[in-house]
Image 1: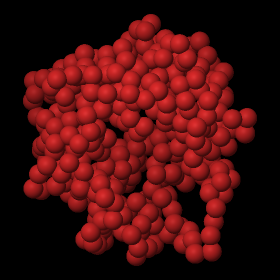
Image 2 (image 1 turned 135 degrees about the vertical axis):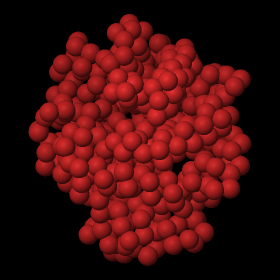
Image 3 (image 1 turned 90 degrees about the vertical axis):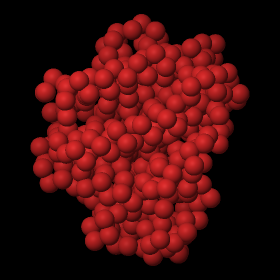
Image 4 (image 1 turned 60 degrees about the vertical axis):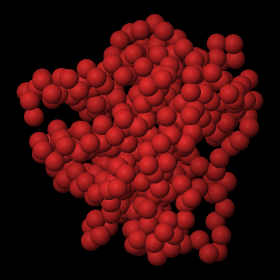
Length: 391
């Protein structure tokens, strides 16, 4: 692959990130009166619901902190990050360490999930903002919260999840992969502070890989064995691909070539299984045995699997140098820009039908915020720059 092509793509992604995506959130999302961010923004950026969703509050605070720390010490990025972190610390976390899922615009609680993901994103927001230099104590707060979350992850009854007699003891991919990503954000690259936890997460993720069928199952038994049920056959191609690049990052940290090869394979297998050969794009859900998926939205094309796949195949290419990986990276990039990017306004649509037409016109909602699109573009730009320098 010639250097000129890499540079051209990097410039296009940088333009999209810094002239389109980030300005949309800078201008429209901050709630300077009440703190935090408005998440529910329509196609043009106007607020259509003032409730605030903590996953997105924390992820946006992380994103602007990351940009300030690694791209440019832009004072507005710092102010926006600080706005989010202060709101989270004052309104989102309970005395027992649990973190709400949603709040009203004033920060009064609306909903507390029986999951650990609000806590996970709260941790990465504090950890990254602590690196701005003005709030070093936040890193210790993030580590204390992680200790709680790690214990809760082993026994979800501690966050209110009941265990019933017929429970099969199913393990979901989401928990180990998100915890692995949290540890990456929480600890320096050469740190061994969380070695045991990292190894445990990696081993749990590997249990979801079915090497015979070349699939990554969303749910498996505690020992990794197959569960022949709707949940046990479930494939979420985008989720598995995202887990692949999380593993890539740790393979590089640990200098683990075997883990690297596994990451390359699960990204390939999940794309091969998940790509719609007729209309293009990644299916949201599939059944590993070919049954009709029960999720009504199974055939939809969502923004985040495509942004994660774009970065994942770029990492694959950076390792393998394979024309196939470069071709698939561009295939996903072209589909994503042609279908999710909005020619009329800034930011991207989040939800398409199978044919690739938008089904929802909003740019921000309860689950779509300032995270997957800018994170992927930023990571791709960083890696493309490295590839240019290497060339």
